[in-house]
Amino acid sequence: MIQLDSLSETFPKEPIGLISLQVIRSVVCKILVDRKDFENLKRTVEAFQSACNYISQVAFQKRCFDPIALHALVYQRARAIFKLPANLAIEARNRVAESYRLQRDLLHTFSRNSMALDDRLFSLLRSRDFAVSIATIKGRIKSRMVLGEYQRMVLEKPVKSASLIVGKAGLFLRIYVAYDVQPKECVEPVGVDVGIRKLLVGSNGFSAGCGSFMARMDHYESLLQSLGTKGTSSAKRRLKRLAGREKRWAKTTLHQISRRFVNSLKDCEYIALEGLPKTNGIGKTCKDHPAAFRGWAISRLLRMLSYKCADAGIPVVCFSPDFTSQRCPRCGTIHKNNRRTQALFRCVNCGFQHNADYVAALNLFEQARGGWAAVSQPHAVHKGVDCKPTGSS
Image (cartoon, rainbow, N blue to C red):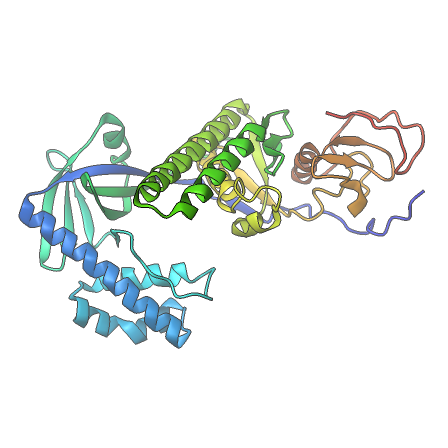
């Protein structure tokens, strides 16, 4: 028998967090303005972008990244130099502070033609038809919006905030709405694990592999690198088109996976999820697949899963991720050697063997129900590392 050095470690029985069933959704709408209002809005966006770059320089030079402390340094001068309304200067400060929250080693520059709008800079008018009122550097303007049935349905909900985007096809508003959903009475947990070999695995048997996802992402990555080294104008244009295509395809794929999983849940089931507050750093540990997991893939999938569950009234409970990949769901043994490879779990004590991602989902299921899940007994000839593989998938 192998000496086990981690058997004293135990799982917490209580969840570490419950994701609220408040749903935040967004829609993109085109707004119709005349030439004068278009120029006014465009100059306002440019002033907002310049203010962000000015605030970023002050924050980086002074090493001041707290929004409250930064406010005292830049608010008055930003308003005086760029003629911004008070709330727009505050939104510029908030955007800069948020961008430095994770990365503070380099000076951040802002080139995107957009500006953030809170509920005092933007209001939705529903008197006869949908219209919008937006604050600019030269007063407020009103304009009509081009809406479809889906946008109209979403905009019936309470509006939270918006962002104005200047694109080649005109002016667009991304409007965020927030509303509460009555949670269902769910008593049966379903453990969910997201990972490298399989994008999403559930203890209810759901599995979404990512072999083709990885291959296509790697293909995109090689094309983007090849175009980036050429440096010609045509290569840059194709690089931009290809990057947009990659982003849209990946987003669609993750949407489809999360939707299929939510549809697979029964009425009495809720989600037991790993608490991963630092998903932006996941890509750093995935050295074998830098293209597919640059940090955003897992975090994007978790966000999609969370809001789709919330929209359906399904609670999502976050549990501690400690030892979910090292604990045997059959005998409870916790040991680092249980995880043989990225895809294989084999218990050093009882010989139980299964896919590592499914084992992690089982352990989350066990945490949620306060006990151990019932699994089939392995047909091991001997206990320990050299036992016969069983239950493989």
